[in-house]
Image (cartoon, rainbow, N blue to C red):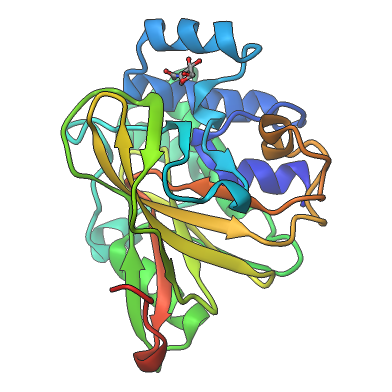
Length: 286
Ligand SMILES: *[C@@H]1O[C@H](CO)[C@@H](O)[C@H](O)[C@H]1NC(C)=O
């Protein structure tokens, strides 16, 4: 996995440590952080404990740690629903260009100045969306719910019913980074194939959707935060990371040798995981 790929899939939520995309990723993160209202206090607290790592990278763990009673610190971005981008109907989204070479037009339409953080975020999103997929990856940027569904059906086989999963916060709080303990019901969800769709910073809802050929596992985990927050969290475990770039942020977070370990990560609440719904191979405890 190349650094370029990392910045594409891990998106705004993850800080890239070694990549020529670092500046771009940082800007995405900064833009997102403003949306997320990460408190200064949390940042400082975290930096103090974790060698200046951005708390947003604290989403990785290994399959070995996916067990009941495990306590770990996790970052869950929480977007303010009143300011987060909204889905547009396909007609409306399709009536606008979605292309880096139409940037000027787009900036005028949305009244963003050239140097604004919003303009930078749009550039980064368009670049990510226009970049070529890596080997074994199929990707698509969806600018509407309908186009997300079309891509997903094409990728998973349109004859299948689709299941969709997302992390949900069962309690309301503004805490984005704390320790969580895994509760009893860890559910593995059958996912011979999956499409993961990640939010991208843009004036309306844009999702970077992709699927990969290598083996992935999907889990749903119930978590309780130290403050009592309840989260039904989705987890994807990448069983083969041997093709990932050595600079992949997860290796640094986990302190494992590049490619030597599986890597799991939690999904933020506004991302989707689509899987084919197979009648006799549904989730083991659903
Ligand atoms: C999580 O718990 C550990 C050990 O109790 C503590 O050192 C760490 O600061 C906690 N992390 C957060 C984000 O509160």
